[in-house]
Length: 344
Image (cartoon, rainbow, N blue to C red):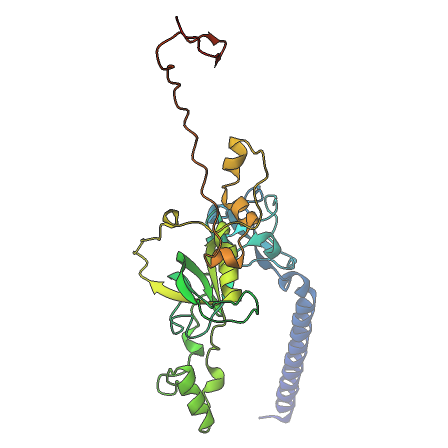
C-alpha cells in the first residue's frame, strides 16, 4: 500500500475517533440539561389523603360512601390515609366536601360501644378477681362483691362479712391493655412456639423467678390491673363503693345466658340525697330516671343493706259513711255531710 494512502487512512480514523468523543460529550451534556430542567415537574410530591366526599355534619357516623381519597400537594397534619381508618367513627365537627378528615375530629374509642344509659367504668382487678385472667374484651360478666363487716364505734373490721351479686351481665369493654377496638398482636411479634415461655400463675412465676429467672419473662404481656365495664349509670355508685370498701370479683358467663337478678324483689338502699318535699306526680316520676338516681347516690350502709329506703306509702282508702243507728235523715250540704238529724 502506498505511504500516502496509509497516512490518509490513519488521519480519517483519528478524525472518526475525535468525532465520536465529541458526540458522546454533547450527548452527556444534553441529558444532564434535561435532568436538571425536569425535577421540578417529575419529582413533585403527592399525598393520598382521606377527604369528605360530600358535606358532613358533626355527630354522624362515617361510612365508606361519605369518604374518598384525594392526592394533595401538601400533607395536612393529623390526616388519615386509608378510608378504613375512618369508617365507623363518629364525626365531631362539620366538614366541607373535599376537606381532609382530621384525626382530632373523629371519635373511634370504646365509647362507641356504649349503649344509651351506659357509662364506661374501670375497676381494679388481679388474677383472682379476673377469673384467672381469662376475661377478654367482649365477654359478659357478673360482678360479685365481698364486703367486710365494720365496727361502728371503733371503725375496725370484724364479723358481719357479706358476699353477694352486685351487678348482672355487664359487658367487658377493656381488660388490661386490650380493648374492643384493638386488634390481636401480629404473628411476627409473637415468640416461636418452641421458645415461648409456658403460661404460669403468679405463684409459679415467682418460684421460677426466684430460681434464676427466665429470659422470656421480660417479653411477656404484663398482668391486667384494670377492667373497663359498661355499667348502667344508676349503678355506678354501687360499683365504686364496692371497689373502695370491699373487693370485686368478675364471674364469666355464657354470652347467650340472659338471666338477670330481679332487684324489684328486694328493698332498695336509701339514697344519700332525699327527694325535695312537695314534688308533684310528674316530678316524682322524673326522680326515678337513671341519671337522677345516680345523682341521689348511695352510701356504704345502704349498699350493705343496713339502711334501705322506706316503702312507698299506700294510698289511703276512704270508707263510706254509715247511716246513723236507729234510722233518721242525713242532711248533706254541698260536699260535706252535716250532723244527722233523727226523725221523731
